[in-house]
Structures are given as structure tokens and as C-alpha cells.
Length: 131
Image (tube, one colour):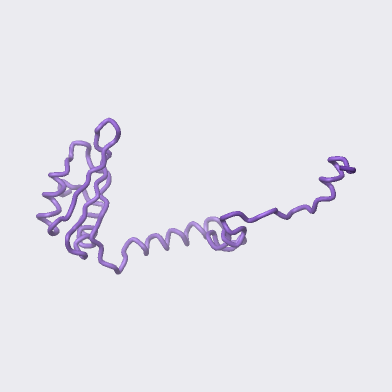
């Protein structure tokens, strides 16, 4: 090496990156976030609008995730509620933490495809006790 460290650093071009890695570089980021000139509030509003339209999909669902359940609710109660009000169930899975307590989240699989969408429409943002 016949150059000092300062000379090597100053001779290296500024502003260029060595590789784009697995992410695809700035182009992938621009596709994800939109144009760089867009206001963050505008991007957030656009992302929210996409999410809102995606929640009510046209495809019939056979699985729903039920959250914010009380910790004393068990799988039998969930199965009874959805099988009597919506339709036949394939499986109900209540999620537990490492201590064996309920996390308040359950996955409900219906036998027919449209029953998940029906249950979503019927019980979304509603309390289980009927309120």
C-alpha cells in the first residue's frame, strides 16, 4: 500500500453503495413506500385505505381469528357459540402462553367456505355476551 488511509478514503467515490443485498435496493423501498416526494401522512392514509378494503374481501373465508377474548373463555364455549349461530366447525384452537393461561386469541375453522365471512360480519367488533 503506497497510499495513506486518508488518501484511500478521499479517492473512493462518495454516495454509491457497494451492493443492494437481498432487498433489491432503493427501487424496492420506493415500491413499498411509494415515491420519496410523498408526504408520510399521505402514505399512511393510502396504506390505511388499502388495509380497509382488504379486510372485506370478496373471497369466502373458512377461518377467522377471534381476539380480545376473556381469559376464562375456553374452546368448548367458542365452539358452542359459533356452531350454533354460524355453522359447522372443523376446528377451534385457543392460544395459550407458556404458563398455560389463555392469550385471549382463538382460531376458528369452519367446514363451509362462506361461514368464516358470515361470522366476521356477524361478530366483528362485538362482545361475545351479545352486547
